[in-house]
Each structure stands twice: as structure tokens, then as C-alpha cells.
Length: 255
Ligand code: G3P
Ligand code: CA
Image (cartoon, rainbow, N blue to C red):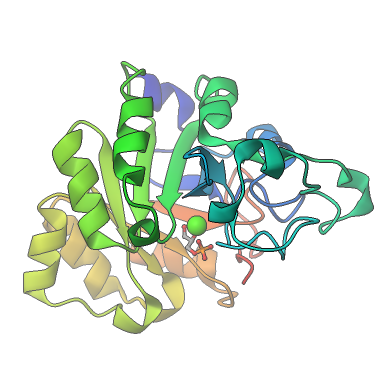
């Protein structure tokens, strides 16, 4: 299918965290283009809702850290958010870079690469699941798109609304040892269970695999991310410095 055409090695996919955010401002068009250039298999992004209900790509709930503005995304309209400079905080080279919407990401990147779309704090954005599903229903082939969140109920909701769309549950580092019962529950609807590699062990990966699930890993600190990912036999690595082939120990993600 379409996904196998895009994926370099289905046994270990390479996911550009917030785009190739080690090389360009996170969650911007430049970072996503860089992820494509570096031959990642997927682009990871984070989404929120603006005041006028648009799906905005940004990591934090507030615009302060990554843009020229201040305050919460939910208090601004898309038109207002477009005025912001989302590039200079990374480097002057990217001055004037604009924020993107999920609609634009799909328009510009869906044909080229897989997308791993994280719903950030969906409990703060009532109706965000319906908006995402309604947007994705415009795409006949959803095999290269995965939705993820730390919010289990939100992922169950997405799965119920659009079962052919794969969902992933992100596991909080402090809760990385999951009981058999919890694993059964999560793998009953989620195709992926994604962990911080520093708090993971091979047995947990095996348990997800035994239940037919897949595992992606990320890490903010663990320099052995790639080595551990390979040793544990995980299905993908999420990193800021995505490159193919996965062969260098520089795959950490930022705070
Ligand atoms: O995809 C894993 C990772 O994105 C989760 O952490 O804070 O970068 O969204 P964060
Ligand atoms: Ca994320």
C-alpha cells in the first residue's frame, strides 16, 4: 500500500520530532521540509485549537517560547497567529517563519511522507477530536497517518469515530511499567504504545508486541536511544535529528 512505498524500513521507522527540529524551528514548514529532505518516514507534530476553532500546529499551549507573541493559543484567532514570527526564537535565519495549520500540513506533506499527529491537552479543547476526524475524512487512504496523545480517552474517541485511522497512546515516563490489564485495555484500540526509552525495558516492548501492538520511542536525555531502540526491537524512533539510515547516537528530543 501507500505506506510501504514511503517507509524505508518498516521494522524501524524514523520519525522527525516536531519536524526535523534539531535543524529548523520546531513545528514549522522549514522543520517539516527538512524532515522530508533527511528522509524521515514520518513527521511528528503537536496540535491545539485557536479561538476560531482552527487546528494550530505548535507544541506548547502558550505562544511565548517559540514565537514573537505571548499568551495562550486558544485566545487568538488564526489570522492573529499568522502575524507571529515563529522562526526567530530558533535562529535569525528563520525570521518571519509563520505558524502552520493541520490543514496546511496535510495539503503540503500528505503525499510525501507519513504524519504522526499529537493532540496536546485535548481535554482543554472540547470538539478537537471531531475536527480532526472531519478533516481526515477527506483522505481516502489513511494508512500513512497516526494520531497520538497522552490522553487515553481522547484516543479511544478518535478510534471509535474513525476505526481505520491508527491511534497511539503516549505513556508518561513515570508510568512506563504497565500492568497486563492496562496493556490489554490500551492495545484493544491503540495500534501503537509509545514510550520514553529511558524508562522502558525489553519485556514491556515484548508484551506490547505479543498483543499485536507496535512501539515508538523517544528520549530527551538517553544517549543510548538508538542502541536501546535496536536492542529492544521497537518499531520506530522519534527524534529531533532524524536521518536515514538510523546509525548515529544523536537522536535525542528537546525539552
Ligand atoms: O512523540 C513523543 C513526544 O513528542 C512527546 O513529547 O513533549 O515532545 O510532545 P513532546
Ligand atoms: Ca509531541
